[in-house]
Image (cartoon, rainbow, N blue to C red; front, side, top):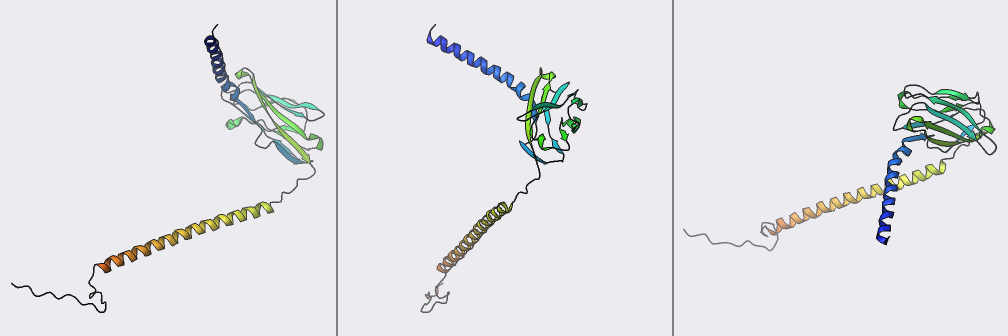
Length: 228
């Protein structure tokens, strides 16, 4: 086979692969799971913490399966799992590993919320929590999101003094620059108006007689009377 033929077959295969990828891309992007913007959250020992999780699907869902799992360097286990029948019914828990866990989720108002509340925190609760979702309506397409929980003795207060000082300095500099620009524009405007008035005065003076202007040593030219 010639080189041209091989090149044509290669291009055809690449084209076919690209078209298949474009066809499958919406499917892989249709089911989304989110645990919020923060990848790590902190909670005090003995308190409660809400572990957020929401899902969305462009194709809708039926009998959607969800679960929360926990893992650290020593152990891994499923905390809770359940089913969401459709967008008109709330999530139903099937298995719950710990009585300290409460499902706070709801599908009302299209929130698709399957968050859990973890109470009476212990230091051993530190670890990764993964929210997993599988949608049978999308041929069992699944997705997951993970958040890290750090249980601490107390939360450290963040000292924002330096940040506030920097913001104040930056704000002052910006304010000073704005004042300088406004002052510059004002001076430019005044100078422009002064030049215009001076120019008008010069033009007016050049069009008048010196005597009329009252200048000393000047005399108006006397014209003889016109004879009739």
